Image 1: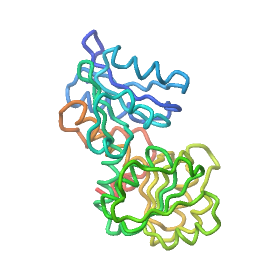
Image 2: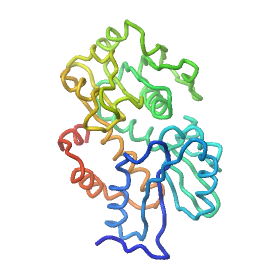
Image 3: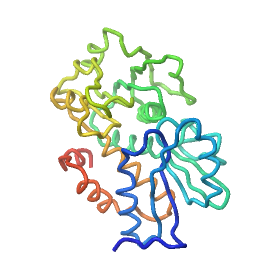
Length: 286
């Protein structure tokens, strides 16, 4: 039975732009229902010119916690009172818990990505496309796994910076249009799309033509119309799409914000019911 909203209902939300595509309310509200928590999770799209007012207002409105998506994972840091592992290392946040007037931020994207790498047999070399919070979370996870080489690919070299030491991992930076990228792809084990490409029709990354059945392709995108995911699947590469990442960060976010064990099977089932995705695609790395 769904929780009846009343004056005691706790409020959680996702802020970002765009954000209406998000599936987060599906599994968060299913989790609240399963756990018997009187709470509701909403999506609040926030334009850039309203971000500061929105971020400052979330605590004043009495929310218990919120998630942050593009393009605010780095901007939200200045509004958070305390950063905990691994957000305090990476320098960006996607999950915030509010206790009284104090906001504590973490990065469950990074932890979710790291958990996926823990289940892969190969992790010596990687290509990461993107320069935002998701890309930097992925790079941190590869560095934690002591990946030997990362090829970091982005449109804007001015955004290709990290606030943590890569340790022994060598990071090579490339522009998105470099002609030798397909060759680099074919010689690299894991390819990651952490850009926003793929949400709209006919968007692609031309260098994905270098993918082979020997590659693992991980995409933060979970649109079933993504040309990037279709290209990766056609290549024969092992594909892990963004639904698995979304759920794994959701499990960790639920536990961080509520202090309770996440009802993982309920959260997975809520997504399966809504989306026409093959169930094995979500279970590949379980």
